[in-house]
Length: 239
Image (cartoon, rainbow, N blue to C red; front, side):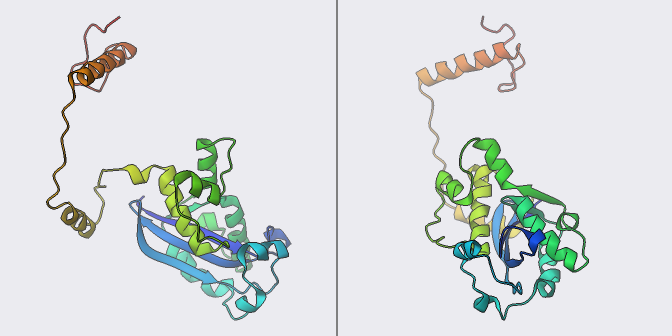
């Protein structure tokens, strides 16, 4: 799967079962692990006030939201944007519960039933950094992602930051390999950017060659002569 949507919502509170609603939804598109610049963003009128604690987080007042569309008016556009894409969400059960509640009001299937896959970056982060803070701000600090402009939570900004966090969590930013499915136009741009560039070649020193050979022999020993790191593994590994 090459198309992914990094999704985020802001809500009037924490519990859709008690009537809390979505007031902002946004998603940014990744294609072959690269941001395309395409995004979806909408503010929504929830027909109710935000909890005071939630208002402190997102700053979206009843007055500001009063002339915005209801969820039912944007549902088709949102579902079309995410169609056939893997959805990436931080703390996915929270956002999906709110999306499900909104869709249920419209007699629509649950959100997860309308997309191929939902990936939870909070689960990924907890696996990589057990016992540490793994909210979005903490992950931005950990990966050196600039979030100084995030004074309030906003769905679009948070989705953009989460896209960078996701790529860092999956080490996509370190890859030097161009995906074979990369669009031809993007390959052309990349090739032009490398015009005139000569990759430096540094020969190993004698000591580095000895250390490399010693390590290969260790691999041969540990794998009983089946190391894949050279075409002809040692037949009699060093003891």
